[in-house]
Image (cartoon, one colour):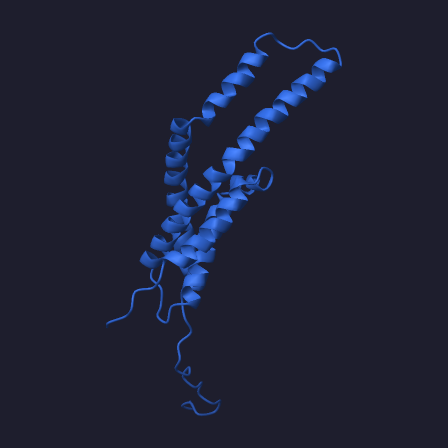
Length: 174
């Protein structure tokens, strides 16, 4: 049995990119609160794309590999999307504080320090730590999604015709 290995990279990049974008969008990312919906869905999508491009039957190992690659891709896309969004969120928080103080409400004296200190999390060290932790979690969840995707999409229909059912009345009579 010399079966050609499936091409994992393209389906994993497509499924992971979609899952990463959905995980990085501010309101849509709440879907990950439901059992990591976007990551499992992205990995299952990658398995579906892999099954369409593969002639043989996919194994659970194939699903785990493409799911892991999809999870890593989703983590990178999600982390890259967080860069401009975190800066936008800090500016939004500053504007909200300024607007509330315009209405005459007294803001705590250390609030400016907290808003300035929040930008310390935008350093490369924190970014890489967040990317590493996100990649670890998304990879494990992607493996699970890949295995689930194989159970849903990985089995090919056989090319042979099913056995014919016996016609009624051809059995042994008692």
